[in-house]
Image (tube, rainbow, N blue to C red; front, side, top):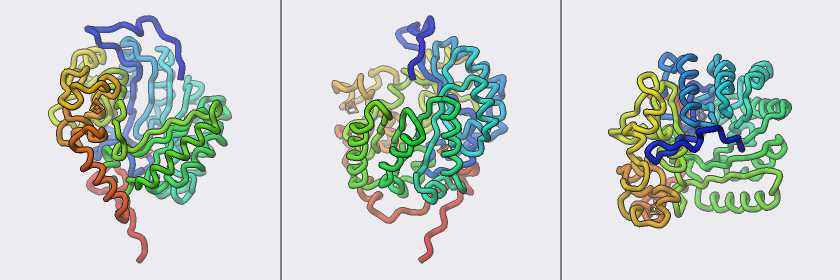
Length: 385
Ligand code: SF4
Ligand code: SF4
């Protein structure tokens, strides 16, 4: 995405840059039940969601703060009947509007309304190229046909399209066909992202982790496709942290580029930050976005490098990957200040790698499907003996 730089975009405040992107999690409601969903197990209910007027005020404050890109996400953002109104408002504040959607249950008339409101880019998730595999992962019937029809309707209206392919043990062997499908749909980009193990995905980790052999085959597929499709399709590839040698620069650094607002108005440096005990997240219902970004304890907690322990503290990569993901450090090492165990230099790395090898080679347990009532989440039926 390339966008004009509005006046004031380089404004800093005590050396802190304003965020470039706002991830607006409009709702946690979703017709799909993906076991790889990174939403928290305790999902926000409809009655707790920000109202239309509250979201509009958030977009006003984001534009004033210097945000350029608005990512409308969830859950499934089209579950909000006011989405057109929100997009039109965001466009009036010159925010670039990107819709991140599952692409089911959206009629052509609704899509026309979203485009007329000013929608500029669509990311649609494809769970698998195999219809049965797609239905099984999504926990939703006839999902692939509906997603493909939606993606084609997006392209027919001239909007740029990105295919989001979340890959794991059950679909990784069809990666080549997923890339071909993105090309056939006329997508500009495919984001091949291995599952990030937060929320529901963490609860399903043993069912989803691919084997190292699968990962290595997929690396070769991506390398070849990038060579062959250069100039026709951009292929982004996120490898699974558990097999990585160095961590990803999570969110491009804590409180550096993206501000996330959850459906109930809590403002977080990343959508998984609630796993870190002791962090208190301010709410847009109580405080302006700018004050939260620049001054709140949660956003300043892991900014810069002063909080780091060894080996990150003296590592030459500390300004490149920022020590990896704080939430993963918490979940896997039990310490949000620790080096992300995805890094080979972490004392926890060998244990995490051994865990990945063991879980990925054991028979996969049935999926725990994502649902609003975590305590009543349906398990996939066991295969017939
Ligand atoms: S990952 Fe699946 S269940 Fe989660 S929000 Fe996206 S489409 Fe819905
Ligand atoms: S030690 Fe820390 S800064 Fe260095 S590569 Fe590993 S995670 Fe990154």
